[in-house]
Length: 186
Image (cartoon, rainbow, N blue to C red; front, top):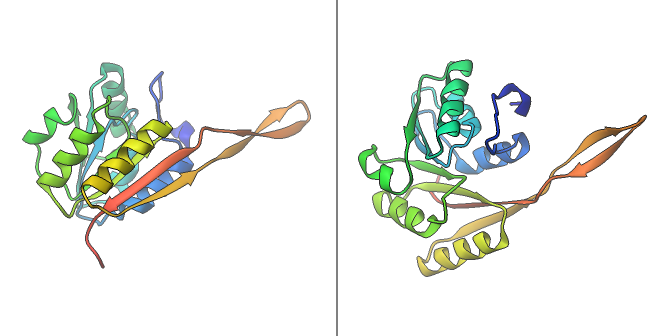
């Protein structure tokens, strides 16, 4: 889905090309239960909900402006299988139904606690995390090594054309590391 279709405000959003890779790596089924942790604008929640007509998305977000945007985007796209949860992970996860999948877009510095809790609740959960900072990538790789989990890391770098006078120049966006782990074998 195009980025400009979403109501955005001043809240970070997982961009279209990164969403496409991340959703592919999530390997969602029509009846999956997904936690979208650090939901931002809800772009991942909305697209995932459309792929899971018999499933449920829990969009978890602590920032009030972002919570409002997730709700607005849920309404705009008519996805009734998105439940917005205002609060911080991992604290708010304990009251939710156990997920089959999790997308981690923002953690407020609690990546280790969140991943540990997710895998404790469902050891076969499919988890995809997006990070930009090398320190965050390093932290996740150290954690999965300690937990003896196999993880795949994909570096995605996107450049988009921008008009510069009568020409178009490619403008690069920050590289994003998409880390995927766990899930059931097929």
